[in-house]
Image 1 (cartoon, rainbow, N blue to C red):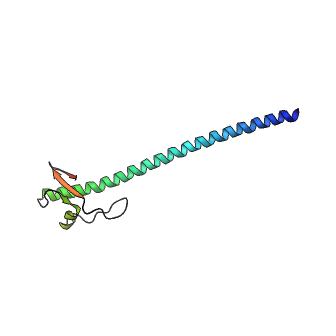
Image 2: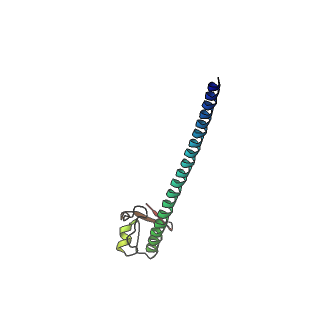
Image 3: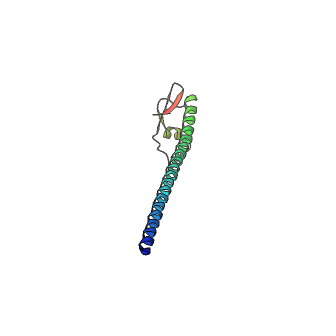
Length: 114
């Protein structure tokens, strides 16, 4: 009878420890998932800011070209390179040269991409 009582207690402790273990595993899993999601969001936001800076530089340079009267209608990055308004622009994420055929337009005193 003592053996059965000890076995039941022992079995109860194992079940309780197992339950605590799984609760711990679930909590750790949720924490890791939250950290990963937050990290991905920060990374994507950082890339957006990098592209914003490069696009702003291109737009400002194109605006200067339009205001000086050397550019009309739709232009491309290649046009800005050829007119020496801009040096080669590097993609901040891939570290490759940006597409020279990127179209830029000036409408109502606003420069935007086509």
